[in-house]
Image: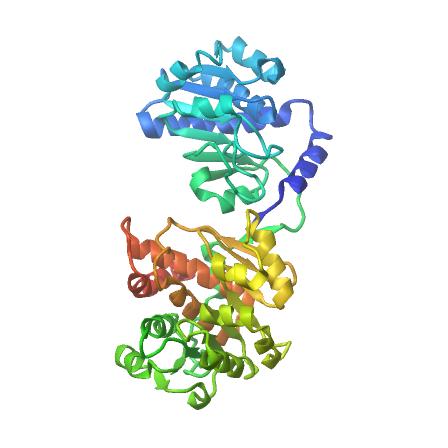
Length: 479
């Protein structure tokens, strides 16, 4: 897993490292790496490095110093470097002196736009991880003239480093070079950061505040049948979803459980005939009371929020097996929290709300800090909470949290959540830790969405159809 640390902990680690490092060495080390990435971007976008133009947007902090030193290093490769100082009186002294010695040019804020328009690459060194809030007007005005690729120092200026929130003018980077460790912004604001490159500068950090599963983690966690397995040992998942009027949720959730390689899928509900016609391998019945034994339940998509839906949810929660409660089930819990009385406190529960459902569950929207919001909901309901959104956050009652950074926005389509709930249920039935099950399901769901879209909009059915390719891609790492 990739570790992610809050900016407070990273600043403390940097202070410890600076105390035992010769003055200026750490900044020069970081700046040299930044210059290497800048040269790579120039070569990628223009075909050459020598003779190209780079403009630095320089603030008053250490990020501005990194940018200035990087400019000095780029001058050694015959790159024309101009620096726009947003606060000249507070510019990093040694970095500014190094740039001037190397032949770099310092230009005024008033003349800045013309140098930005000429640039082959713009380096964002406006603010660092201590800053909060949107860019100030003078910096925001400069961004209007940017047409070249942007390389951000540590994080895109104007984006909150701990939440990824954008509340006003902010940099949108093509690449972000960060130092020492990943910060929450890098996982929570992919559209702002672009490609993120991590440079090791020797920070010592303990357990991370947030984690992100990589493909190897998912490959190791996803169940693969062995020679002694049968349909029961691979996990039997029950799906209570859909209705006669709206059978699509049932088809999608049950189909996802099938394609996630569950040993056996049992469907219970009014869409039994439709599910049976679409997925002949599913054992379909009309009622949860007739479904037979399962090792986990998926409940909620399309069941309605009336009396019948409440009774279905109450029955499922009382079976003593893990439950993934999605869609209408989360609304029922929010409106009638007494349904949770049927649940054995030791039985795992995964809640999968989108922002609106989260607001019903918690009484307020997730807000800017979605990680903190998911953790609060996990504590309140003693459940794993998978908070859907552009970036999916998964939090456990014990405080563990992970984020799934998407590959585009292709999952924002009707029925996509039904597919995700089927994946979660299959992994719960296979015996995975609920927090890991939710995270691994989100990862494969995101990958399937990307494969299905292939650069164009797709549908929930397309995402469902791409699950086998996503799993093949994941498992290729262990073959």
